[in-house]
Length: 448
Ligand code: SF4
Ligand code: SF4
Image (cartoon, rainbow, N blue to C red; front, side, top):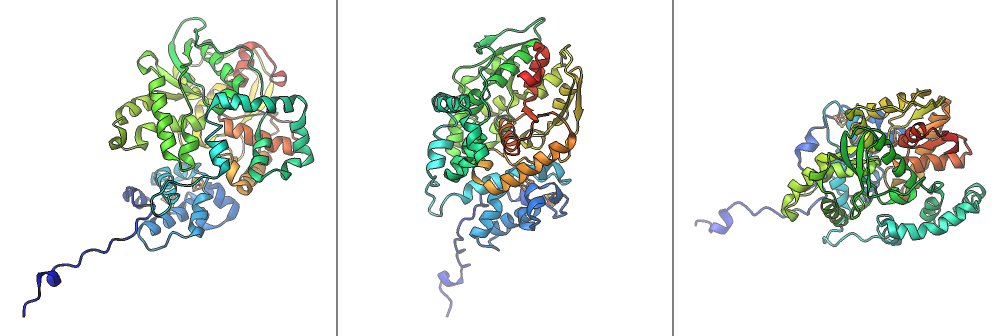
C-alpha cells in the first residue's frame, strides 16, 4: 500500500532557536584560520593567559554558538563581555579578520533576552550612561557640584583617603575618574576664522562628555586648526556620537543620535568634520556601514557623513601641518588610543605633529598599542580588568622617563590620569592638541 504523501515528503526542518550569531555574515567567522598571531596583542589574554579571553578563543566561541555546537552559557557570555573591543587583534591579524564586525553585533544580540524584549538596564545605565553623559546641558548642571568639590580639593581627599571605595563600586569609579576641569581660555564661537591664508573650512564635532569635561581641549583644537589656516564652524544642533549606547547594547539610542548628527552638519559647506576624541571619531566613521538601509533609508546619507569625518591629527597631517615656532624643551611620550590606532589605523600622524614642536623629544612608550583599560565605558563596568590595565600602562609610562604623556582620546586621558593620581605620579596627562596649543600660544605646559 502506497504511503500517504505526508509521510513520503522530506520531514519539515525543525526550527532551531535563534543564536546571537544568526544575523552575522558567516564568512566573517571563516576568515579566521586560528593561527593565534593575534593572541599576544590582546590585553585580556596578556593579563589572564586564558585562551577563551583571546581573540582566537572568542571567535571560536561565537562561531560554535552560531553553529549550535555550544549553548550560550553564562561562562561564554563572561569571556565575551571581558573583551575590550579595542581591536588590537585586527591590527595584529595577517588574515584581515574583522573582529569588530563579529563581537559588536554578537554582543548586541546576546544581550537581548530570548523572547526579543529589549535589554533591561539598571540605574547606572539609565541615569548615568544614557541619561546624563550624552547630554552636555545636563552634564553641565551635574558638574557644578564637581567643580566646587575640586575647588575645595575634596576630590583629592576622596581619592587619597580611599573614601571612594565606600561608594557603590561604579559610582566610586566615576567620582575618581573625573579629571581637573579647566575653564577654557575663551568661549568657542559658532564660527572661528582661519589665521593667515585660508586653506580649508571644517566643522568641529564637539562631543558630549568632551564638550563639558574637556572644554579647554576643544578650544585648543579649534585654535590649532585656525593656526593651520582653517575656518572652523561648530554646529549647534550636534549631539552625542552614539558610541555609549551602541557599545552597551542600546542600538536604537545610537541610531537616533546618528540621525540628529546627519541633520546638524551641513556637509556641502565644509571640507571635513573634525573629531579630537578617538572613540567618537571611530563611531562617526562607522555610521556608513552599521545599520541596514531597510531600517530607515538613510544609508547613503550616513555613508556621505562618514566619508567627511577626520581625526584632527589625520587631517592636519594630510593638510600639511604648519608647526609652531616656540620652543618647549620637554620629554613626552605618546599612548596610542585603541580607537585611533586599531579602529582608525592612525598611528603616524599624531607622532608627526608632536615631533614638529620645537624642543619636544618624543620617547616611544613600551606597549603603546595595548589598551589602558578605558575602552569607552569598560572602566565603569569591568572594574578589575580596567585596574590591571591601568596599572600596567602607568608602569610603562614610568619607564620612559617622560614628564608628559599625550593621547588623543578623552577616555584614555581620564583613565591614565586617575591611575597617575592614585599612584601620586607627577607625570602630566594631556591631549596632543593641548601641547600644540601651548606651543602656538607661548605657554608652558606645566602652567596649563
Ligand atoms: S583572528 Fe587572525 S591572527 Fe587571530 S587566530 Fe584568527 S586568523 Fe589568526
Ligand atoms: S578586541 Fe581587544 S580585548 Fe577583544 S579580543 Fe581583540 S584584542 Fe582582545
